[in-house]
Amino acid sequence: MSLTRRSLLAAPAILAAPALLAGCTPLGVLNSVVPADGGARSAASGVAYGPGPRQSLDVYAPVGSSGRAPVVVFFYGGSWSSGRRQDYSFVASALSSAGFVTVLPDYQLFPSVRFPAFLDDCALACAWVEKNIAGFGGDPSRVFIAGYSAGAYNAAMVALDRRYLDAAGGSPNLIKGMAGLAGLYDFLPLDNRTTIDVFGEAQRLDQTQPVNLVRRGLPPFFLATGADDTVVFPRNTRALAQRLRTASVPLTEKIYPGIGHPGILLALTVPLRSRAPVLTDMVGFFNGVGV
Image: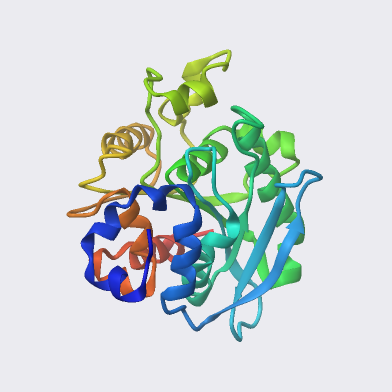
């Protein structure tokens, strides 16, 4: 499939293209054809946060920022089996142009690993951020995590289950807020090949589900999904949102009409932001969190 700037602007079918889900070639093409935000710069590329070949990250920073900026660590999707950080530079550019030092980590994927190894990687990347982000203009006391699809699951699990950050050497209160776009939070029983492969060997399946890990005292959450998402159904967002409300966790919930699974991610690009205010809402959430 060929993506052009004209087709992205004119063809709604692009928003339903399954190939965009995996962080594969079309997303790389997307980066090259859509106009980029002008307020971001690449601060570092391919920095190792661990010894493995996929334990690397990129850092983006606001242009001309002075002092220490708040930080967003963004985890991409791809069914825990595909994806690469370079294809999500448009997300980093959008967030950095809004004033955030943005970190895009890679993490280990199936079939090389299964649950919970990719969560260990995500927590390790967060611990790296805490120790090192000041050198890139970021404020380690204002670290947020975010993600899309499977990456939103990863972010939610690291925010909900303190064991991951503890094992990685991160501070218990490192994460000041979590933003999830079209995340998987409540998907038992395992009913497709992907989830069976990735999670089927877990000793306690209930502990793989974010909805089962909600507790009082969590940082604020921003949960957003498209009303027309038929890949990760909106019930995932609604279920986690309800558990968070019951536990009195600060919550912002957004369900965007007419938006499908790829659409909520593509709404972060410059030409498609008019379809849904995803970027505005997410940035507003981060800026509204008191730390």
